[in-house]
Length: 618
Image (cartoon, rainbow, N blue to C red):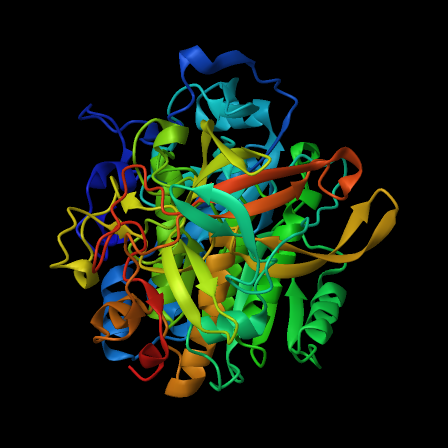
């Protein structure tokens, strides 16, 4: 079993939990079963119990085998030397053997499951069947639990596999429905709307400071929120005015589902805002093999992801209009997102991968975490940089009850992208930037009602409980892996203008609106890195060591300052689309931190800060 375990990139806390160790029992005699510890999600408790799961319910899952040898050591060497492995070389050195895959496949089919797919790196065997078959095969029962407003399935006790497979099987993912808790890190729709359509009300500012309100907040007279920054404004703020366009680079975007108008919308947006339209094969869409639709997809909300997809594509294209984009859409937002990431990495589809989703905190089954880490290790070994949004719930204390960062952003193999509130001036110049954390206050007339204070959202950050201090963060004072690494604009009150076909009361058509969240920050940084790769003449791959070794002037140091604007004034349509039901005026206060720290230098609110033109030449 030890040969299948790879050491962490950084010292790892709770190693036994992360490794999802297979234990065959304390008895000296061989046991017919081997228990997979860490296979019961933390939320599957008696207090959350609702009912037993029907044995006829469909279940799809993946049996993960884990890498042979020390894949993490190879990844560290590749990152340090720039001598990356090809996908074929990685498979040859570290993939589970075909004999191991065959053993797992034979057992699964013998239990009555249908085996759907095994990727070329042999990382997992995907199968599906019924809950009754899963109960018999994995030696447990399944129940329904109430979790965050959902009813989700989970095993009632740790699952087990035949002891003959104990040396092969690392984890089984999908028997429980933890993946249903994944969410996009997209913020901005806090005005209720009767339809899928959304647009911003006026007044708003074409650039920071264009339109001043009459609202005084904390002794400052505030400006109206920007209508939404465009490509020229964001490129100017982050040092890309006059820089190359990212040609020769390829960015992969991973999301669930695929908006049917995604390319049409991106080209319409481009034509309106001075960007080149996608040409030839510059934009491609891929559905990863081995992902599939199931009956449980009826619980899903595909349309809810369409704005996320449009945002991701238009954000990357705005920062790097010459870069190629590969959009990889999973048919659902259950565990098929990990299959999509594995497909991008194992097929080498891009050198930059942006992911604008995650789980609130790190409270996931251990068997859920380790397979993700395996894919990220392969990415680093192959010179692929993986970027994850850091989340939109600040330190998560108001969501999960304690401060902690989100996963996968907390992985030491990920570049975690945090959020800021950004002011861009009339000449596309960066005027100010502060941590994105928002209190909302209602405004009556021009008077702020301070009693209505409500914390809305903020960039994810904090100190990991799962991962120790990675080498690239050594000496910065953190006690463990600190999130985020780098930040970009994410505040929906200083966010980006995006264009999308939406459903309005008077029909379906293209319109534009301002949006934010670290779902914006991650693709912005991915596009910025496409330009950086072009400037360097090579891909940066897993870029965290590069980010942390950059010299003075490489970042805008974002920290709390008395000189920052106190906030801005935002006007929303009550119904989300027009003034028929009236307007709501609010103050959006900047820089509300909860327990995170925003100080000069590196911190757990915005990391190193935001990139400048100087970082391009580092």
